[in-house]
Structure formats: C-alpha cells, structure tokens
Length: 44
Image (spheres, rainbow, N blue to C red):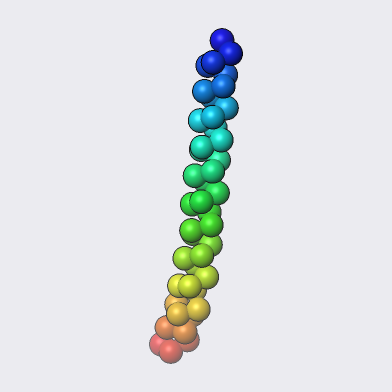
C-alpha cells in the first residue's frame, strides 16, 4: 500500500510541475505575442 501511495504522490508532483511549466510557457508566450497582436490590430 505504501509504495503505491509514494508512486501517486510522485506522479501528482510531476503532474503539478508539468502544469506549472505549461502555465509559465503560456504566460511567457502571451507576453511576447500580445504586444505584437495589439499592434497588428491597432494598425487595421
């Protein structure tokens, strides 16, 4: 029972880490893309 719990904790930790990485990547991507998109839309 204990090794299974340990495995689940490890998996959830990896999952949350991946989610955080994804969130960081999305925020970073938006921060770079947003100004150019706003500029593009303001030019139209």
